Every structure is written in C-alpha cells, then in structure tokens.
Amino acid sequence: EVHLVESGGGLVQPGGSLRLSCAASGFTFSTYWMSWVRQAPGKGLEWVANINQDGSEKNYVDSVKGRFTISRDNAKNSLYLQMNSLRAEDTAVYYCARGSGYSWWGQGTLVTVSS
Amino acid sequence: DVVMTQSPLSLPVTLGQPASISCRSSQSLVHSDGNTYLFWFQQRPGQSPRRLIYNVSNRDSGVPDRFSGSGSGTDFTLKISRVEAEDVGVYYCMQGTHWPPTFGQGTKVEIK
Image 1 (cartoon, each protein chain N blue to C red):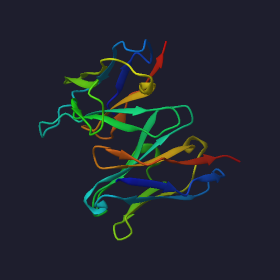
Image 2: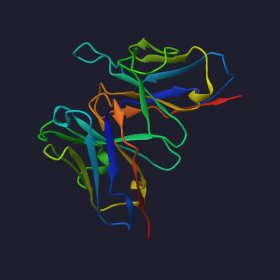
Image 3: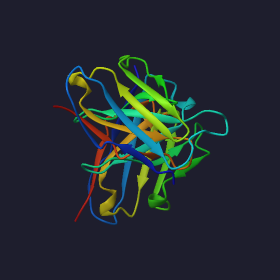
C-alpha cells in the first residue's frame, strides 16, 4: 500500500527556516514526479512546488520562488522542502503528493510562522 | 494563472438525494497532448485530500460509482448520484494542464 509520511513541521519565527521531509513507501518512488501542496488554516489548497523523477526539473509557485527549495533522494525514497525566509503567510499544513496526477497524499505536517 | 471557479461554495443535501458541483476554468483545459487534466478531490473533515476523479471523468480505484465526473473545455461537473453520510466534506477541482496547477475554492457538502 502507498504511504506518504510528512515530518519536520513546527513553530518558527518570521525569517526563520525549516526543512520538511516526506517518506514514501509502497511504490517505486523514483518513477514519479512529486509535489508539495499547502493549506492555510481554514482555507483551500495551494500548489507549492514539484520535482521530476531525477530531480533535474523543479517548479515553484511565484510566492515561494527564491525562498523554498524542493529536492529528493531516490535512494532514501524521500522528498524534501527547504523553506527559508519564512513569513506569516506561509503558515499552513504542507502535504506531499504523488505524481503529476496527485493520486496519493500524505497526512500533512503543520508549519506555523509566528513570533 | 488559470482561475478555477466552483459553485456552489456550500451545498446542503438530503441523504439519498443527488448533488452536483460545477467547476469552470478561465481557459480551456485541453492540453496540447489531447488530454484534459482536470481532477476532483475530496477532503473529509480532519483528513488529507483524496483524489476521486482524474482527467475529467476517470474514477480512481476504490471510489464508489455514485461519483461521476463530466465536462469539457472550460466547464466541468462532479455529480454524486445519492449522497451518503460519508460524503460530507469539501470537494476541490484542480487543473494540471497549465502552469502553475491551480485549485478551485472548494465546495462544502453537508447533510441537511
């Protein structure tokens, strides 16, 4: 069975950094695009970034460009999101999702940016 | 960016009755490869999203056949033939044809 387990969320001050991880199992991780999608408290879904199978292509929503970096380690079946210069508006549950069709989602990890 | 507009935003329904959610895009979602990358997701209270429908009308494995998707171009619909209690939640459409991928605002389905 497919499993995606996010971790690394927490409380961070504005301007701070955080690194999210997503551990994948139950499928051949290296053959899928992977994405991060976030959901602010009580709000809708917002696509954040994605990465192709070998990590050579990365895309970001404009609001995080230059601050967030998506990466992956296929040997560890893991996806990452390095988040720098965090702002209050980055507060959200961050989900990792499988494939360009978003066919499977993890349970999410909460990032709270507040002083 | 492509704007996805859902209606209604709130949908009270009676158990056993049908329900329909509309999703309209600001541009055609037909990709140059001929596919239409329009997805529907269900988010039950306290849970992560789950994909129900991909490429307009293809139901995911394990999704009850009371859920169906239809549409083309810029107009799409998710229908529930007979609403059950477990269908309560928020439903999102999403387009993957144009960059960046964008979601609708969500439609909250609740039982009357």
